[in-house]
Length: 109
Image 1 (cartoon, rainbow, N blue to C red):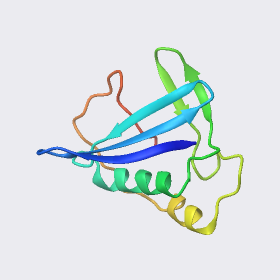
Image 2: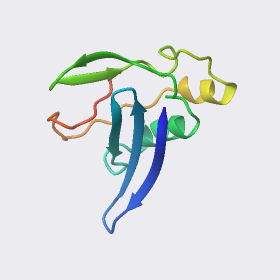
Image 3: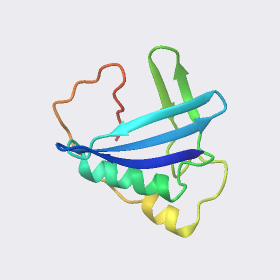
Image 4: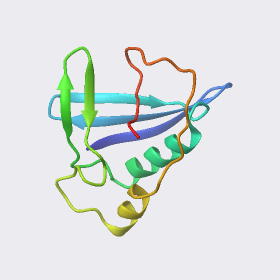
């Protein structure tokens, strides 16, 4: 369940923050639209629409990775029409020089 979603702005860029509430505690995520604007816009819209509510983590390896299920097929509740339309959109690949290090969010394609 998404607990809150906020926009925090600074002089140089906007950081989009999302907090997911789980049975094991809250997980806070930060997204940088300056690195992947279309992807951030898409995910943030899904969050606001409740698209990740009832979704689940299908792989958790302590200290390494936590993978969440696909928003369209990994939910335990049906999506409404607006959620489905957004979830089924194809987002262009936005590749960058950001390294995959501890704390970085990555998305499979």
